[in-house]
Length: 232
Image 1 (cartoon, rainbow, N blue to C red):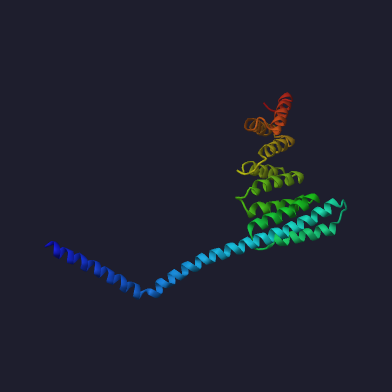
Image 2: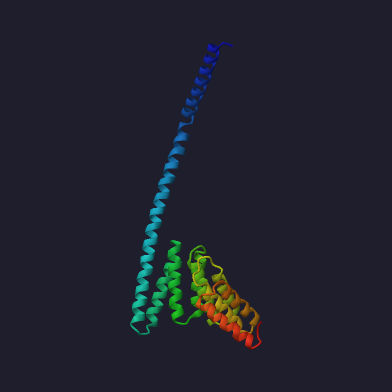
């Protein structure tokens, strides 16, 4: 085949492809338009949802801050107003129970927990701390909330759960007070006669955080347990 014939053949193939593409676009123009419109609407929807979520977060946190300010004012007044505290708990719980942004649910539950803990209602406080932890397991608040669940459990004499929650806090990546959690685990184990477990926890604390004040206390407890012949 000559070069000219090859050239004409290529041109015909290109023309044929172009014609087929044109026919395809014309035939399915409404479908393609629908896909394009759907894509644009999806982008717009994401923007609207993002804007709405931002507004919801701002509104929710403003509401929680208002309740927090009321509680702070009540505490600074140095008067006991159980009815007012009940009202504030109900307000915070209502915010926590809404199907709103996660950060708002966490903050509202934490506020409920703090008020209940201040009233020494440790069971209710633990439930609220746990709700806050479960609401966002990826937040830095997860470790803090588990720690507080551990403290409440300790107050309730529920030592198995106290150790479990404190361990969860200590293992949380973003928890900033791991040494304190470990020391409390050791203290609880020691208080219920699990001296070897207590010693093991104290040793871990001292090994991982040798310069921390809780490590200093842990070393002191290790010496005491050793002198009393309760642990090696």
